[in-house]
Image (cartoon, rainbow, N blue to C red):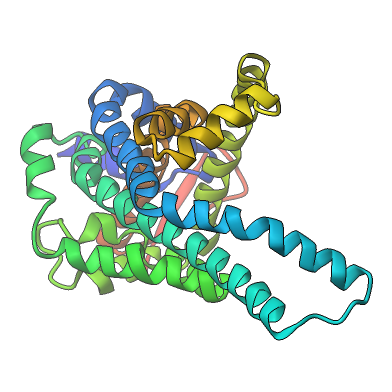
Amino acid sequence: MEKNSQRMLNLINKRFSDILSDGFKLFLRHYRTLILPLAIFQILVITFNILLLTDLKVYLDSLGISFLDILDKMGENTPLTGGEWNLFSLFFLLNFALIFLQNLIGAIIITIAMCSVSNYLYNKQMQIDVSFFSSFKSAFNRKIFIVILILGIFLPLGSFLLMFPSIIIFAFFIFLVFTYNIEGAGKPISEARNIAKGAFWKVIGVFIFNFIFIFVASSIYNIVLDLFLNPSSVAFSFNYNLWLSTRNYPMLILYQILINLVNIILAPLFICLSTSLFATLKTRKDLGLIYQRTRDPIHTRLIEE
């Protein structure tokens, strides 16, 4: 009991840097278990984007030439016809629709992916022995539709309309991927909101840190990849356009997997970082304590709420 209490104290006394460090440790410790299911979900995002949106992309490419002509006319202050204005509006509308559908597909699948491993990671972080397969199976219940609705649909919808609503939804309800499947959480939405209360910048900080880390790794990888693929070459452009025009889905999927390889390899990172933060915040809430640091960095004290 004393050992467990000390572990709880250590958990709630963690700085943000400690939380990130624990998230990385969780990532490394369980990478072999997580990489296969989460990589499959990442590949599903690519596959659905290719299968569902390639026709729209090809159609937009066909409009692109006429759109450039319209821009030239506008640059020369040449009046546009009614048909050209319609084409101009259609091009923008379809581009927005394409971006929204890409975000929607990605958000829904990634939300399901995080839900599938969240309970397993949380239990491991709390040093509770649990089977991955039983935890994975238990993730798919009726409550998961609440998570998909809020994070998989409302979140991309908010980012499509205005960025601010999506930030609020993310910061307030990201922990729903954990609370919907935790025993005793009768109201998972309220529970997620209460746990995230007062930790807005920490939640956003985890997202930004994950984004920067993957962005840097992807940039380095893409520089190396460009040396071999040379995507600006005429030969590569010809082959890629041929894949599009002939709907060569296998080659399009393989190409997208290749250029998104870093995202696939690092797919477990964000949920591991989020688990570390969630475990700390939930423990503080459950203990009903407010954490404060004294001026002496070696000592800490806890004051009852």
